[in-house]
Length: 225
Ligand code: VGL
Ligand code: ZN
Image (cartoon, rainbow, N blue to C red; front, side, top):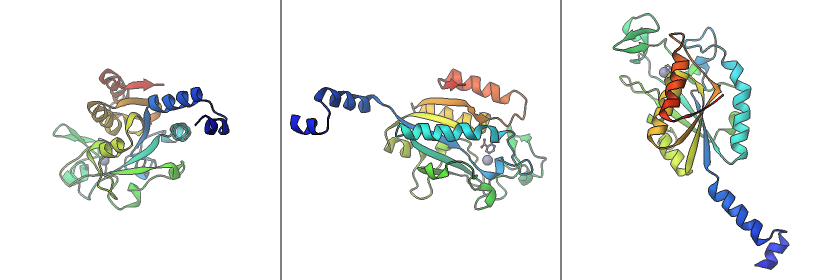
């Protein structure tokens, strides 16, 4: 044994340190929530202003998480035509509330280009993709309720299969899909880190984003500047 260790220029002590380092390092995942065309252009339906400004930060975070052997997961909002969350389904104006829920402009309709992932970041780094496959009469903002199309796995199953403990949350939108994803993650006992430099709010009311950040903090998520 000593002979082999010598050959590797490593002594027993270093080997133990290395072993414990890997043992105590928590497995991380970066969840990029709804990285899709429909949220990204002023003329498209659910445009989230200034999203471009967070792109470099996310690209860096991808590299950072990867360098610590973490995994990168994206979720995709995915609605059928005439979905219950669309204002047009009820002949309402966009952003009108109905039954205490905001009705949205038509967005992320299944199998359309609008529902596809945006270009412009390191998409080849993505390990797994979760589809928020909404049925006609159900809407879910959280990335946890839905599945990976190829394997029918839920986000929780995917994370558990990698023994993930720490989740980094980025992208859109702060007070809807980010917020509910964080809420579910905390209920499922994950350690959650929200990167405020990597999220953006819709702000139907001007302070919705800020209020959501403070609520996520109260729930136990770590909020990074
Ligand atoms: C979202 C509104 C409707 C989001 C999705 O990704 O935050 N918001 N659908
Ligand atoms: Zn949606």
